[in-house]
Length: 437
Image 1 (cartoon, helix red, strand yellow):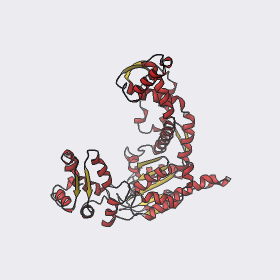
Image 2 (cartoon, rainbow, N blue to C red):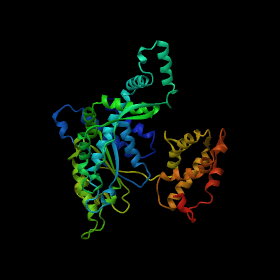
Image 3 (cartoon, rainbow, N blue to C red):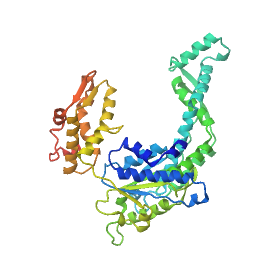
Image 4 (cartoon, helix red, strand yellow):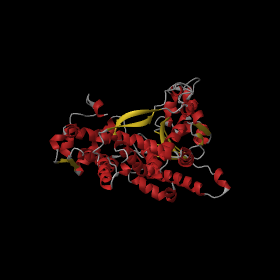
């Protein structure tokens, strides 16, 4: 994380600009929120533990970039990130899905992230160990061979000549299945029980015949697992989650009880009450130990089309002091989204078709037409923001993607006429409008 400590708010915004068009105020606010967490981490006085930082509510319709901003933040910061739908906590009645589960899931993500980093660092070293192990199985006593023979057989291994040959290796038997307590509502807090039982159960091994290409992966995982200090992984992951973890709570407006009558939307109000201590700062037990939520960055979002942030319970509102309204996307925004981001939709489709040796390109008129059509559909039907662009683009390219062999080694220019010819039979007022959605 050390290189991330040098990130300034403008650096963060510059990175977000590579993937997200417009929404400058939202980018600015999340950049400040992230930088303040870095600043807090670098404070060298006792007051650090008393520094509580601001969470954010993003207000805006679907498809304008709320989720993408949060997800890209986590990538920039190399921080654990989880997106949850607030409505999922109301699905099973009053209690719903245990709200604390999002913190346990976040810690799982943090653990996997750190484990993967350590795995990658050890991969080259372990590859050499595995190579020696397999060569010894295939050519017993290879270390005593002359150099020419050793080099020859090693080359067989490295160039894949031996990959289809079967060898017998020792593997650990799969863990015996335990009763799945986590499928029962209200028992998610017992998540660590199953893992404890697995750790305590005797580890049995067996001989198994596999192809060498499979043996490479099995033995590599086994060797790396022996070398990685699981306690160190937990320590690093816990530090990242507690200080830089990001929880994105989508559709928070859906847990507002609009009808204030008795017994109405009890589960929605209950979810708000359950969310409050998590966002305010509490300790959640996970299978990796206790996690404090005081300094996790919570970003909530919602359209708030039929309600407002002030309809949330006052205490919960107070835990999201920064409120940002995201702009609806116009035709010009759609054109920019199609052309500018490093991962733009058009660039994605170009790369997909390159796999089949098909080259496509789009004229400016074609891009403008796709943007106009997407905007028109959003106006006449449900407004799903930039997601509509993918729907339209997919429709335009579906014949090329279906019969790509017809276009192999050719450059296909997508122009305005081509675009219109592919969607002329589908209009927002036709019976087929369901297909464009």
